[in-house]
Image (tube, rainbow, N blue to C red; front, side, top):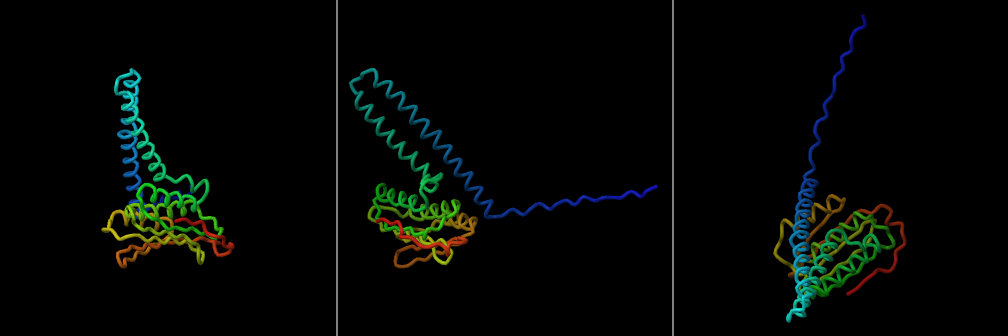
Length: 228
């Protein structure tokens, strides 16, 4: 009789979880909860109240004009919140017009909404920045500058491509360290293959982030988009 061949099945060891990936996942879930609360509590309740107030105003009460004015003001506030939420989720301009346009929109909002002075430039030298890296560069600028944007504050944002690297340099008035925010920035940059350095001098914070861009050094440079 033929001998039976015994086969053994190797059980693959469970992969070790990447700490950076786990932290990013946890922050994504926190962000989803925040967005869900905003949509339910702010958006839903505000629109419901607006409908009720407009129905009341339609009855022609003596204060109808004031009620309508209040609804308009609240809807404008809600529209601004929705735009901020859209920008936080993913700036559409990155997909439609590129990184420079998205950064320009960010700079404009920091000026118009916060009263800051923003000096910015973006020169990628004609290099196509991968979407994921572009979004990460935008997020880095957003996360660093927003907490420091105040009336009269001078903010600086410079984006260049040099030595096949996308470089983002941010300068802004120094604020109290936020370990959680900085860790979130660091993890996002590390997850996209980049690196970050921070320096503090004369009351100013400087944040430098960079990502490798294969083929970047072979493309002829163009004039930068700039503002401020």
